[in-house]
Amino acid sequence: MTLARQIADRIDSLTPAQQDLARYILDHNEQVAFMTARQLADAAGQSDAAVVRFARAVGYTGYPELRTALRGGLLERAGAVGMRKAAPSTAGALTTEIFETDSELIAETERLNTEETGRAIADLLIGARRVWVTGHGTSYPLAAYVAMHLNQVLGKAQLFNVEHGDLADRLRDVRKGDVFVGIGYVRYLPYTIDILKLAREAGATVVAITDQPTSPLARLAAHTLYAARGMNAFAWWSQAGTLSLANWITALVMARDAERVTRQLRQSDTAWKQLGHWQADGNSDRTPSLEQNLKAGMQGRRKAKAQKS
Image (cartoon, rainbow, N blue to C red):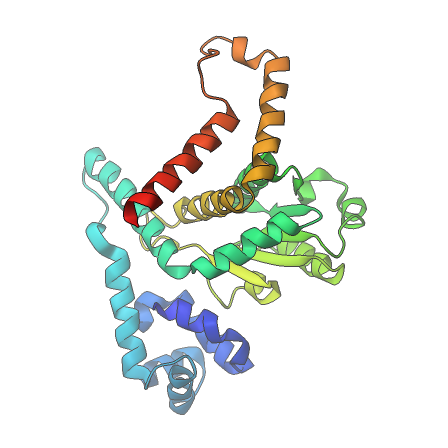
């Protein structure tokens, strides 16, 4: 289990000072991996004893074991791309690094999240009166992506952002029984945090997609999904982990509520036909519909499951 996962599982039991220390470690993990307990204490403004108590509070026998876990996590995340100190020397090397790094981020994102959490969130979304999704800055297109796909399969998801200009009026519609998904990473934008606070006060269940257990979004959320972030200059802006989470949750919703999702997609297919979409250049009546794609995917999963059993 990764250090981030260890912290996430125990975040509510940590003292405010320990949460501050957790935040420092996660924000400076590459440096902390090679610090002594005293160096970490000095850097974080805490005592040596506080560092040792923190390590034990998050499930380690002491600071050396925590540091070993942190180093192992860094090496595992670096994976095939390695912890490069220099930029790739050629365009081909850059291309390879980007794709390899994204693959590593997706794998790390999978390790950071549990199947149990994914299922719980999918069931919340299925049972919600309405689903709202918010994200600002570089998280805005991710929020739009999540909202679009959840609305496609559920028919009740909307993007909720400051840019729409009717923030107060839309907050008026948020209530108990709703699910409010917030997306945000380090340099967390106050818009997203404030909207999630108000949504929770209105009775909505908050789900966060963020980068670490000490994130202000995670502290507001009933459930949190963690996206791995890049470790080098060419990956810090990568959204591969977040997009994978969005695809995973959408797929879980489809698998766990297939009958309703089938109806939703059938209605969308009908609307596309009425709009003349399938008669446009490049399209064909032979192109599988949304409903047909869903059924093919479900049949493929059942076949694979049967072969394993």
